[in-house]
Length: 359
Image 1 (cartoon, helix red, strand yellow):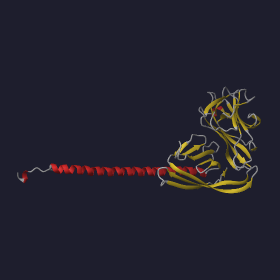
Image 2 (cartoon, one colour; image 1 turned 90 degrees about the vertical axis):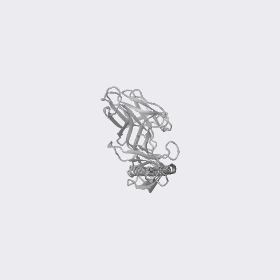
Image 3 (cartoon, one colour; image 1 turned 120 degrees about the horizontal axis):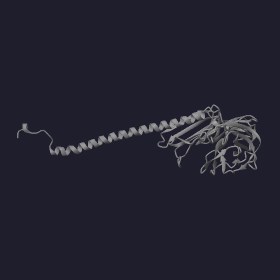
């Protein structure tokens, strides 16, 4: 057969050799593409993680910058008070805390705002450290408010505790006996505001919820005269679901450390029930210097429910009369490292122009 009549193509041998070679080349190319896509995904994950880490650090230091008083602090947490942010006339309380490297909150930075639920701010922190810088001063300042809007008592959620409620009407009253907490070398305190977990009781809106601030008897842990302050809240102001009611209190006059208070809630008039108030029962870690009190005869007589039942309550006020060395926060350094890579690390610092006092 002449060359002109030959059909163009590959021989069987050529095909047998070229097909495996092509398969290897295509596989190598696919592997390269896969590696490139994985590298891009890893870069995007690394960028996102670093961005989130920086965002969390920015939020923390921005809030600390506005602190007016420090409730507590350590290398892994800080709890503090900032000025009013929701136009209710009361300061706000915040807490930031790192959950460590083990346990249910491992590698998490937690944030709590007032009495709201704890929020996970960031969940990829393998190392966390705050370094407070302080200035010291020696002083004796009687009858001078040096710790504005300080936390005097906080009774809220406790492990294993059960939330229950009490109806307030002309007969049924409820209250809380407690001793305000004064940290550091404070010798006096004064009440400034209360927060109580409350809601409307029924469909009527003509009632009045009466809140009284009274002294407490250290033996019976019941309210006693005189009435130090009184606030009346119209029933129509209460929501249909439980929420924190902020109650500004006119100064009740300076009280010595260890002096107990008793907050009572009763009906100030109206039809039927005026409110429902929430309390916690059998919580682990509930304060031993506090207990709920109740009355079934309109406040003529009171009975103690013991420390196993406590009204959900927050008391804010003022410290006074510090003597000796006092420490004030001038700035805070913050370092956070990702749990994925030690190369992902954020270090920042912020000044605290209000110079809040450290307990």
